[in-house]
Image 1: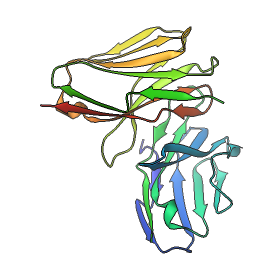
Image 2: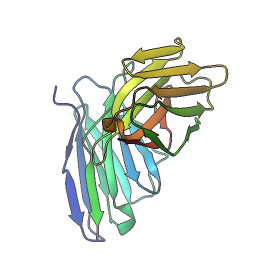
Image 3: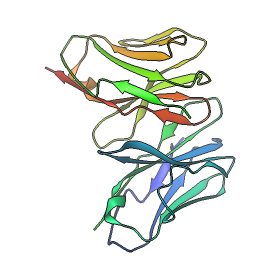
Image 4: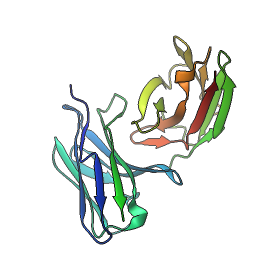
Length: 112
Length: 109
C-alpha cells in the first residue's frame, strides 16, 4: 500500500491567491482528517470526514477555508484567498473505524 | 469535548537513561490512546498504542501505561538512543483524535 498521498509536497504562493491541497487516503479507510501544524499552535484538527461526509469542521479557521470529499479516494482543502498566516504544514490522515490514523507526508505551504 | 494535556514540553536525557512523558485526558469515553513520533520535517508516525481494556503494553524499549480511573497515560522509553530524539505526541480518541501539544525529546550522546 502506498500510504496516504498528498500533493503538492511544497507550495509557495502570494497573498490573495487560491491554494488547493489534495489528499488520497489509504484504500479501504473510511475516515479522513485534515490537520494544520505550526510551531505556535501545534497540531490542529481542521475537519474530518466519515464515509465522505463532513462530521466536524469546527477547526476550520474561517470562511476562507473549505474542504470537500467527493468520493472515498480523494479530498481537497482549499484556501481562498490565502494569507501569510496560513503558512504551515498541512497533513492529511486516514483510518478505519478500528485502526489508528496514518498520516500523509504533508504539504508545506508558504504564503508570501 | 476532549482535552488532552501533555508534559513536559521539552525533555533532555543522557543516552542510556529512561524518558517518561505523561498525558491526561478529560473524556472518560475515550477508549484508544496512541503515541506518535515526529522527526524533524517528517510526518507523525505511530510508535505504540493502547486501548482502554489494557493497562500496559510493551514493545522492546517502549512501553505505555494507562490509568483509566485517573484518566492519565504515559510513554516510557528505556535505554534511550540518539535516534530517539524527536517530538512525541499523545492522543486520546473515541472517534476523532485529540492530540497533546507534544514533547520535544533530546537524547544527549
